[in-house]
Image (cartoon, rainbow, N blue to C red; front, side, top):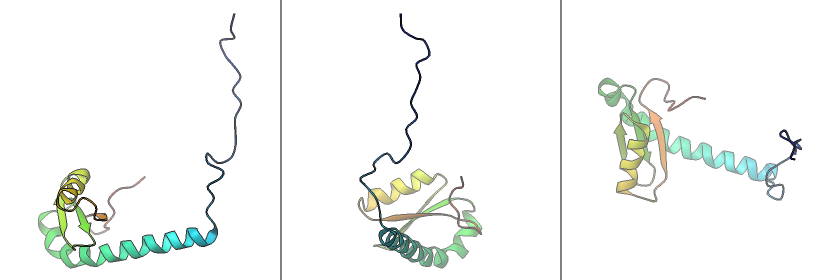
Amino acid sequence: MTDPNPIRTVRGGRIFPDIQWSEEKKSQWKAEQEAFYQRGKVIFDRVKPELIKTHYNWYIAVELESRDYFIDTDELAAINKSRQQNPNAPVFIFRINETRIASTI
């Protein structure tokens, strides 16, 4: 007969221990993400005053390559609108309010 409660061994450590980023690579990635955010923020800040009056708390997907933006009440719908226009273009999501934060944990 088998034991109904087998003893589990808890393994510590990383899931993929062979993939380790150096501090240099981590800081490079963070710098790239910050530059990406700043490029999108410029476009968002340009259109925010007119959109905040009519589309408060909606989502805006900003395409950085074409400088286009797509708005919708749903975050995924805004992303899908941008993907229909340019499937491979990088997109940054903002929420049209004072904080610009799209979601929280």
